[in-house]
Image (cartoon, rainbow, N blue to C red; front, side, top):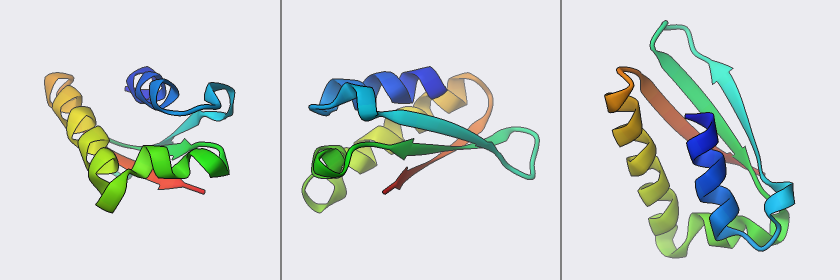
Length: 78
């Protein structure tokens, strides 16, 4: 999961070296939270107009999570 999110984010931004994904375990055994950090100037590219790109990233990650029989949350952190 972490690798997929990292791949998507790196393909969107101008500074792929600044992309980092942190996995935070949740209370339940089948849930994870992924925190995505990008360079300040790339935040707009990851979020998109009216949050469309961020919503799409979350949808892709949820679809991959269903296939892996888990739940995932994606947080974009500054």
